[in-house]
Image (tube, rainbow, N blue to C red; front, top):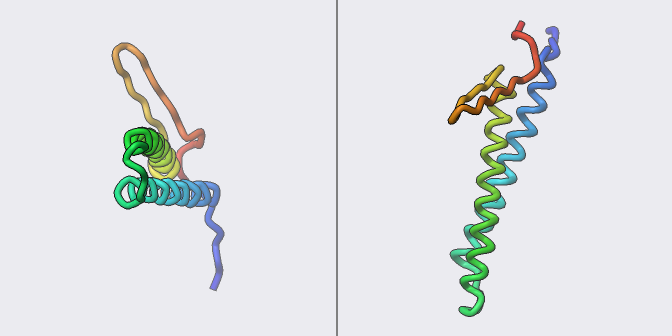
Length: 99
């Protein structure tokens, strides 16, 4: 039996890194949500704590969006382009066509 190394091993490693980052960010979001629902805190600090945790959850959601975009660029997409209100955006994976 012959083992053939993956010719796209960098893509595989990058996909695993992005998947791990997504799992870590999801775990942080779950921990923050648990703190909102179950952690005891004084009533005087409730509004401030909710504001801080809400901001942290928005940051986690933004980072998860970046992770998912990077993961899709790594695994499936070669190029993404968009046009919005006259502004153009284009990004590519930097690799040639798949062999």
